Length: 67
Image 1 (tube, one colour):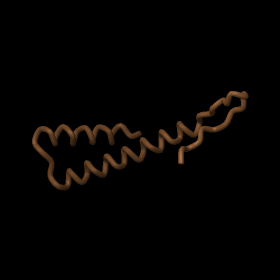
Image 2 (spheres, rainbow, N blue to C red):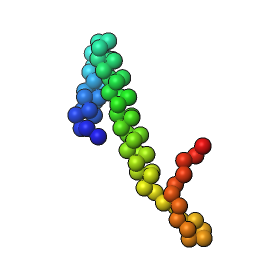
Image 3 (cartoon, rainbow, N blue to C red):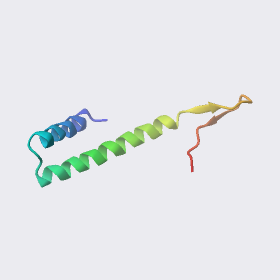
Image 4 (tube, rainbow, N blue to C red):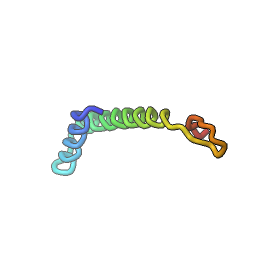
């Protein structure tokens, strides 16, 4: 994840608390948060794809998504 992205999100959050944000800054904040969440979910999914479960009979199988 890009450190600059997180810093900008935090900068906008601090500014919103202190003095408020313009409509352009609110849109930027929403876009940055959506981008952050997409990257976070992709990273988590990649991590979950690497997990193997050992069954009681000793057989390993990949972790399955719940449906």
